Length: 176
Image (cartoon, rainbow, N blue to C red; front, side, top):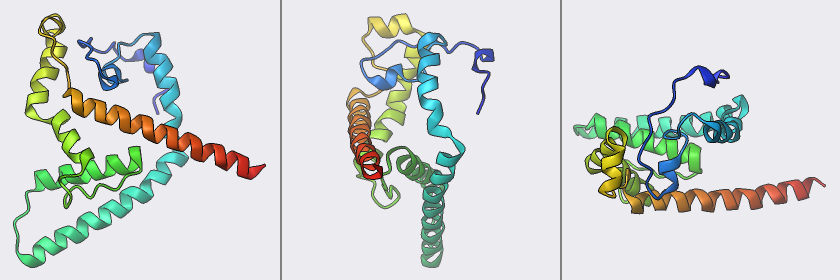
C-alpha cells in the first residue's frame, strides 16, 4: 500500500451528484476529507484481509475455468469480453459484499443489473460531462451515475455494514 499519498496529484473535480458513490474516494478532491476517508479505508486492505479475499477469488476462478471447459465441450463460442467482465463482477461482489452473484449464469442479479447501469455507455456520457464540464453538468442537473443504481449500491453497502457490525458485536461478546 502506498503510504506517501500526498505525492499524488489532486483528483479532478467532479460535479457531485446526489448519491454517496459520487462523493466516493475515487472522485474526492485531495483535501482533508480525502485523507480522512483514506485512513478509514486503509485497514480494509491489510495483508490478512487480502489473503482472505484470495479464497473467494480462487473459488470464482475455478468456476470460471469449469464454465469455459463446459463451453469448449459443447463447441460453443464464448464472448470473452462479456465473460471476463462477469468474472470481474463476481470477484468484486464476493470481496466487497460477500455475495456470490454468479453473473455469467445469473445476468438478472440486482448487483449485475445495477452495475451495468453505472458502467454502461449512457452513464459514461454523464460521467464524462461531470468530469470535463462540471459547471455544465450542474446546470443540466446531470447525475454522474444512474441515480437508482447508485442508490441501490448505497443501500446495499449500508445494509452490509449494519449486518457486519451486529456480527462483530456478537463475536466480541462471545469472547468475553
